[in-house]
Image 1: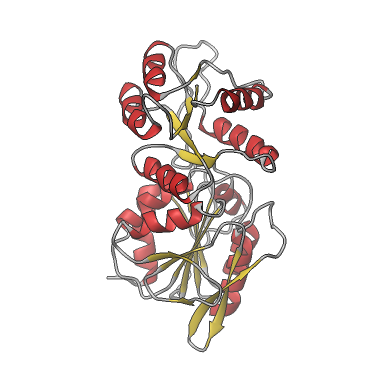
Image 2 (image 1 turned 90 degrees about the horizontal axis):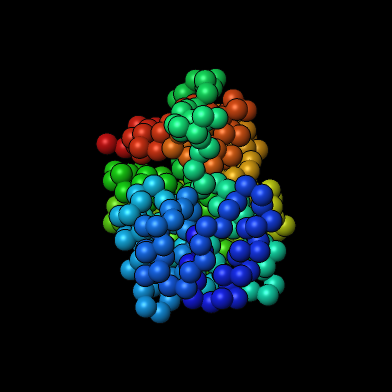
Length: 342
């Protein structure tokens, strides 16, 4: 279902999604109230939901939609503005699956790629041939894991993409221990959205969280988020670390990318890195994870069953680069254990 008060946007999204044969548009509606009524009658796997609409806006409609069908996946679409990003991240914290920014004339091709990929990622699993029962839930296949590194990390670095914000809210909501290491995060998101993500993670209250700036010192127990469209690197300054932001070309079609963050963290910390690879499409982070383990660090990956897309974590797991492959609710405890937190 597409819900947006702009007929132009509804038509654009419909045209984009209809190019994918496995996607069916079941409804196209102009406000949240109609979306709620329509979901009761029609049902949907995924709803692309505008946040600013007359009659009933997206934030008001969201809990009502989830009450009707708790399994429906809601992708919130908002303007690429500070207020739009803040609303989108608030929606994720209250139950939306993901967010994306509405297209401009110069970003329509990128928007088309992102929305198709997200809808396909969130669609329900297909049913059996008889049509009577769903195929069994995904389970992570047997993966060969490496012996756990005995070196205590000096840096803890996270990489995530599709489904990442929800996973991050879960992990950092549970990661209440005071850590002595700086924490780094590269989440595939556009500018403005990364700043809003940092603000929302900061509000969880367990540790400060900021969008990184070039030359910023990386402080213990503070989470530093790579800004949209900039790679975040790590540089050693004596026994401390600082962030370096670069406009170097995208890697794995991404900027920011996880790989350059991990490569630089390995060099800066002499291999004492704990890398955590979370849900996301593609292989970003796999090359950097290999650098981490080759230098004596450790890599954790989210398991397939709890990942929206087992692309990034699946790549490091299948390549044999992990010390552990864990469900989402087991990651915070493992980080506390390996970081030496009380």
